[in-house]
Image 1 (tube, rainbow, N blue to C red):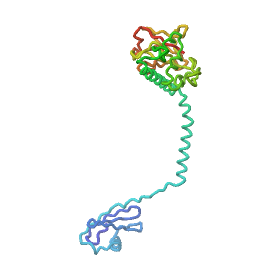
Image 2 (tube, one colour):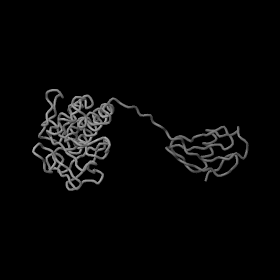
Image 3 (cartoon, one colour):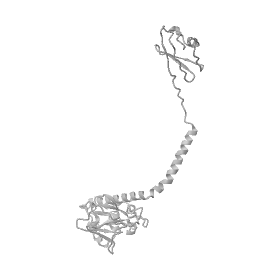
Image 4 (cartoon, rainbow, N blue to C red):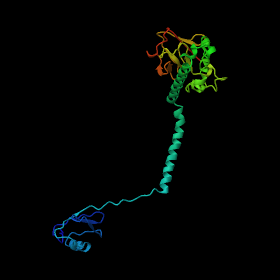
Length: 282
């Protein structure tokens, strides 16, 4: 085992990446034995004397080995790397653009759109009521801008037409899953019952927040000759598979929207306080 030429203490050796490092504990300076090879033996003393001016140190100086610092190599972002990244991003964008149209046409997306349509319709009803003594159009005379005199004939579009300013567009009166109907272009001369997907609760009022205000038109319940469904206390609603596959959405007078499956009607959707609730089906 080689020893220090000054204090005769054993020297520890370590080879890391072809270099041997020795550091003086007293001064903190470091020296390296290069050449890539270290041979244990008496020649170590000669190499140390040649590489280090040991006469500068006092007798008794100790030496210990330290690991060499790791070399950090800075790698540049080449033009080739940039082109590869751009190509991958373009490929991902192309795949997303191809999938998005199908997602928008999917049943889940269309149901979400239908719920949003009903919420906007509910907001329009309530906004209209604020300017008409908290009454919906079905309870306001035609002379005052309402549709009360038109309730008996069972038509639906006049009630929505009265709220054209609040609705802003007739597009929200059409459910995207209602494939047999198309949306109207305007409120003036193109809006008819055949371009509406939602019924209207003729007896709904602002005083009864859980009264049925509107909902999906494809009900299975019996209708009168003028296409009106009369709900009583124990009436259970049902929907055909024409729109939402035997599931329907109901808009309540407080503006909330719930989804119901056939044969089930939540207790929260109670009938109007007078005992009946008439639904005009478009």
